[in-house]
Every structure is written in C-alpha cells, then in structure tokens.
Amino acid sequence: MLKGLWILEETGPSLYKLILDKKFFEVNENLISGFFAALDTFAKSIGSEEVAKLDLKDVTFSFIRSSHAIIVLAAEKNEDVTQVLLKIRHAFGEVMPLIKKSPFNPSVPSDLDELEKKLTIKVRDIIGASGRSRGGLSGVEGYMIPKLQKPMSRALGERDQLVNRFGIVAIDILCRANGKETVAKIATALKLAQSKVEDVLAFAQKLGVVDFEPRTG
Image (cartoon, rainbow, N blue to C red; front, side, top):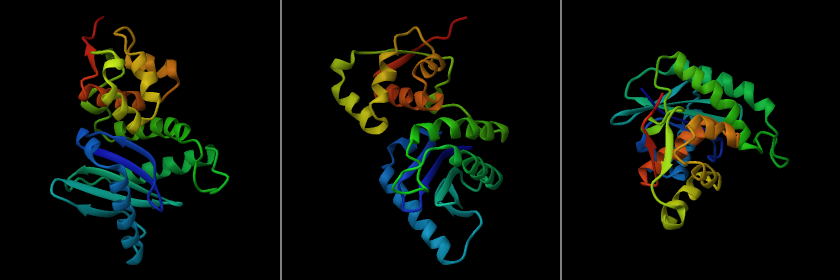
C-alpha cells in the first residue's frame, strides 16, 4: 500500500505532497525534504538515472528525477511501485507547462495551489488504477460531513497548528465544518482540491477539533 508522495525542487523545498499514511504527518517536512535531496545527490554521484530505492524497517522509498525535481513515493517495504512512479513523473511533466512559473526561477511554479489541483486529479487516478488506496487520511472521504467539536475561539493552539501546517486556508475549511456540508461540497465551494480538504480535516480530527456526522441517505 502507498504511504505518501512528495515532489521536491532539486535543492529540497517541497512543491507537492499527498499523504496516505497518517504517521507521516508527524515527520518534519524540512527534515524529510533535506533527506530526499541528499539521496538524490548520492544517486546522481553514482550515475543513477532510473528509479532508485531505499528500504527502511517497514517502508520503501522509491525516487526518480523529473526536470529540476525529485519525485519520491513511499510504500510498504519491498512493494514495487516503479510503474506508478513513472506514471506520476509523466503526469507531473504534463501539468508543469500549464502552471505559471516564478519570475526568479523558470523551473519553479509560482502557484502551488494550482499545481496541487491539477496534479492531484491525475495522481488520484493513477493510484486508483493501480489498485491501491485512494482515500484520505483517517478514512476521510468526500461524502463525509465534518462538524466542529469546539469553537475555534477556544482552540487557539490547535488553530495555530493547522495554520502552520496548511496555511490560512485551513480556517476557511473549518468555518464550513457545520455538520451540513460534505467534504466534497466544501472543496467545491472553496475551489480547493478535495485531497487538500481531506488532509486538513483529517489533521483537525486528530487534534480533536472536528468529527464526522454519520452518513445519511
């Protein structure tokens, strides 16, 4: 089963991520980005141009280069995700020309939200087609109905954690967690990728800020 996907600039900063295993929420993103960048440097030093792999205790990290970027896929140990990784690289190559670039670096997108929206659609299809999990963290799915468990004015610490991790858009999402709208409807209303809304709400659930109403109908 897949656990996470990261796409990084060559120097390490993250361009895109999709987390499918909640334990990766606990990993410092700067730390993991630096780790992957170091692995890529090592791979280049030995002339590797194909998929490279690193087996840890229970996770295999597979990574491959795309123009000016590193694509990393985490999966259960020894699971062969080569074809999935190659398809994701192809999808990334299709999406990047459609995204406005930074005036300071033409290889870096200036609109990461737009990159996420366009790329997530393709990535989710690839993951689904490969027979692997395409659900959000903690089982959050589009049909679920989130509801705040306490006012945000009484959850200042949790609010800070959410904003630090996801940006101010997390507050916009939580403001719509009224027990009436599904995750999919919130994503549509805010013009966000559904995966983004799923990840924010999953983390908010972990913090005890939201829970989900039983599905009806």
